[in-house]
Image 1 (cartoon, rainbow, N blue to C red):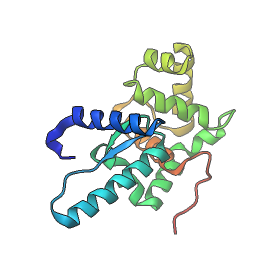
Image 2: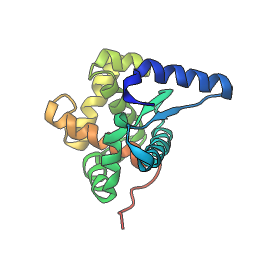
Image 3: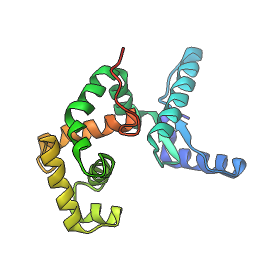
Image 4: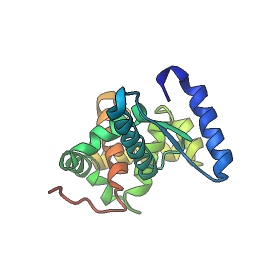
Length: 175
């Protein structure tokens, strides 16, 4: 699809695919390219976009390659992202119950626009529990999710953790 068709065309296409497939599906839209070589590159980009969307558990029915570029950039230097996750989020392993609940809280916090009330609603918890968990994250990581500069570091590390499937998969140094 060309970029001039816009999101309505891609949603309509996804709906048509869903109707034909009769099951859960995702459609990836690559960036436009020219010529026969561009068709091949666009197809490869769309396939890798679908793979990445599956790996990250992205719920969108239509996934645009341009929307997942940050994940591709993070994933290109596995050694650096592994080091970032281990350095920034490694302290969460000291949490009672393991790092996953606090990582889920961080992910929901960022997805909720860094609002405690929206995060609590999203996770089905009290605002007080969210505040406690954010404080615990600050204690264990040394990074404050409320501070904008430190928030960026935490959010990038949380994205990296999703790419690496951490903490389900132990962090392995890249070769």
